[in-house]
Length: 231
Image (cartoon, one colour):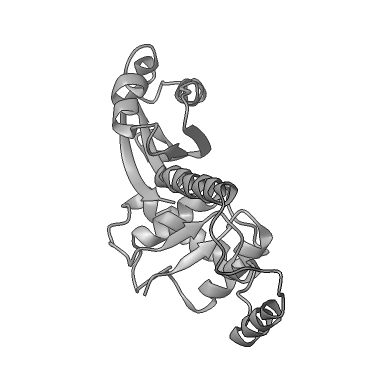
């Protein structure tokens, strides 16, 4: 069964997630999956211990990503940035709708069978064009990406490495939270989150043409995509 979370940047969204995780170790199923990565990537920062269940789950997923990653497919969880469903305007009950229609029937000035005027035709065409344009805008989705950036050796200045990575700017690219993760032998990698507009940014091209090209390759040896999820 598909699971949807709403507005995880707000207190109401975190509270709902905390309630959901009260009796669960993972977002779906009995092992860590891409569903956990989707929600993990959607959180803007490490959750406060005010939300104990979310904090517990976040710490566990964070540890898995550092050690071995997450391979489970999941069920296809969805994270929406809008308000939670119950905050939306409710559809009026059928009885209320019928009552409103009955009241409308009493209005003798409304000609339901009158011939459509030129003004009405023009207004209808404008509404149809607006709906079509709105549909096109919605086609341009966004994705949340978790990226591993590896330095050349333990002498690489990781602060300058991160500055170089964040210096890559383009339309539709938004850098997020980051952290250093030990790899071994004194070497650390940069793990950084980013959000992209799918129609504007190709992560593969960005890695090849920008992050591992001059002058940034002075610090960066390689980049790997750890997680890539639609939001």
